[in-house]
Length: 198
Image 1 (cartoon, rainbow, N blue to C red):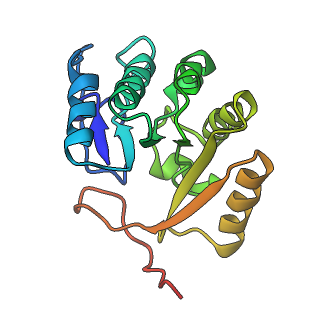
Image 2 (tube, one colour; image 1 turned 30 degrees about the vertical axis):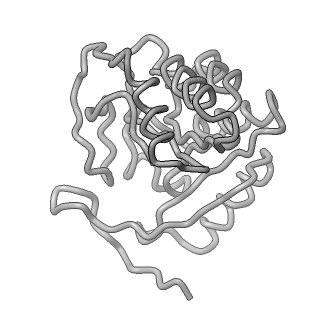
């Protein structure tokens, strides 16, 4: 997994340890080519490209994401590319940049169950907005595998988790993963429980 678009996120989700702030439009124009070279040198067959949220950029960094996909494909046409993106503030025109670049997998995480969204995520993110992004990708290009994930241990119920699964399935999400939330620091949202793999 490679993180693009810098190390400073414009969002402030309560579970995440990434630095937050305003990157003021800063963008590394050489990043797509440098990323492609790194993946090529590592001789990877599968690469995940993720990023901080960049609400300071007009398109949320969508065109930059697309440039990274194109550069990686140029270096290795056989490379399997998965992107893990933010929600681009729900702007589906921005999402289209990435659809046009044709990643094999488009991932966007709803992060938690619907009831806990406002407690866990930044106020600019929400469950319905995330679903709309995933649904749009699948409708525009059914060949792209869509993927989403939630964290466990934040106080969700089993019934709520099943509801998320149903909601994602109903919009054609291909892959769903579950992860255990672990608190990065005392400043982050508290862990409610450790959910065993069993």
